[in-house]
Length: 280
Ligand SMILES: [Zn+2]
Image 1 (cartoon, rainbow, N blue to C red):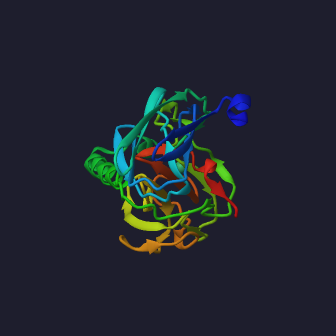
Image 2 (spheres, protein in one colour; image 1 turned 45 degrees about the vertical axis):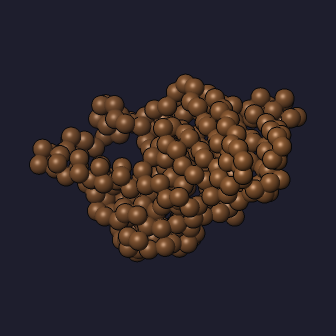
Image 3 (cartoon, rainbow, N blue to C red; image 1 turned 120 degrees about the horizontal axis):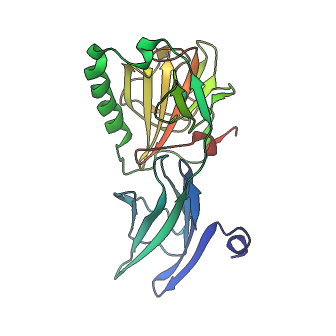
């Protein structure tokens, strides 16, 4: 209660009813493009917990009694009030709670790049390929595996410093393009790129924009994506563990120099990976 009174950031709910008590921590507001945690504590074990956020609903594996948390987020294009609904199922009844989360407009920097014209405006003959690849990547990022495959914090995938942060509004040869949906790390060609957390490889391939790409499914709608690799070291379907090498830094696809583009997606929405990465 002290936390919410001072910061005004967190809704702290103590929910008591005959079957048990539940406490839930939810942020009252976040910036667009930010991930957030929902923390729950209960002294009883519910049979099921259902979560609904951004038009997706899923059953949460129950780790209660005790504490558990779930990672959610809102993409750059979200603004305004969004509903988070949690339903707890007990032996003889269910309890539903709706939280309204204010996704605030957050200002991100602009970046102006000059690239050869053929890379800014792809030639007609690759448009079909680009559309097909976009669908393929989108469908991998929308996978909703009903288990959480990771625990703890996300690890940095490479030691390099950030060369382009998340959310930057890009202008290519003065034309506005979509905002940067991930974070770029500087890295020399051939530097090992490691998985940020445990999971399973859902997609590998060589794409027009992303070059050699790996997508890892961490379960419950959370994915990490690694682009511009010079080499891929895993296969689709492989389980991967945190810090395991998935590929090597390169500059395949649309890249002006060797770097790693890391994306983190929650229920298909790109969120800023730097909120989640830790050196531990
Ligand atoms: Zn990038």
